[in-house]
Image 1 (cartoon, rainbow, N blue to C red):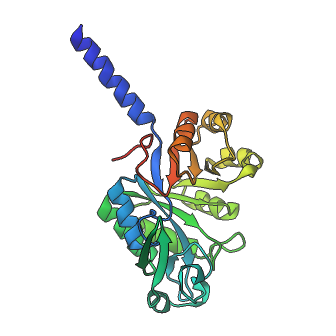
Image 2: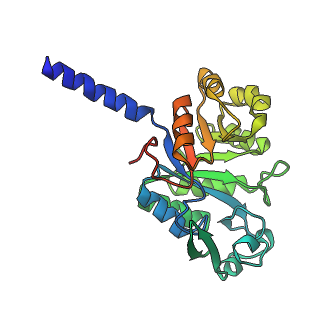
Image 3: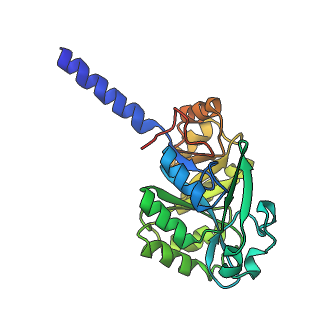
Length: 258
């Protein structure tokens, strides 16, 4: 009887662990300048399952990581779309987070993917409106997809954006790649489109509830929620059944950790 009880307990523990959302590091993590090597490496050390980044195209065609069109918010003075990687790498970025001031430099997508490989985590790649990656022009998507494949992440990465034409382009040409549609309160307007194209949802915190998650799950789709940084909200969204929780802080008990 004791043996049976122990086996049952072990199974329950495994089921509970499996049900925990996967932790996605928002722009790497809070422990470094966003989208830089330090933020990614430190996020991996803290236990993220995935590391999220923001992709743009520099003026010389290099795929780089930057949330904004310009580097001004982080102390730079350049516009990404009109600058070379050499110029961008020449800047030093500064960001104070949780009372700690970090410095860092521009990270390329190639470098980011190498970091993911080194640290044993998976990439979550958000596409920002940029040259050849936008709703009117997808000409730079093949190069990005080739880079992802060359680095060995085609079958494990997640690509997300609010630009539906970009997601449709990838789905039609790379049907095995996992995609997420970035949404806010407007998620319901795009639900049927997500189902038709087999695209998961990435919904802003405060814009979804348990019924939202159940609706996507009922259609065989997963749900990510962003950005959740307090334990109470994390537990709430985990209770809804969210599959991923995007957060700046990795050390949240309700999240899955490696």
